[in-house]
Length: 119
Image (cartoon, rainbow, N blue to C red; front, side, top):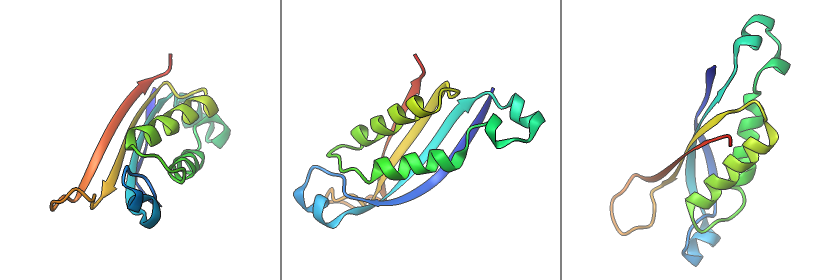
């Protein structure tokens, strides 16, 4: 087995329960870690034998562009789509952070983390 990590994927998205958040948007970061078998690609040196992290990034960016009230909902969509589109992935650890959230305090970010295993 092996791990592929995409750290600090940056998006500008429109998530949140407040109506203003849907209009003005906010900065987000996403950290993604997937478990897959890297043995074949480590020998073959062929992209077809591994998980293409360009596809992982594209899935994250596309799903973050769809408005959700909750970060958990956006994260669930990302996880579901990755499992559906990339059968070789056995585990996903995903963190979605809202930068400078409007919570009435000096908070750098709010982060939710979800971990799922292929069933």
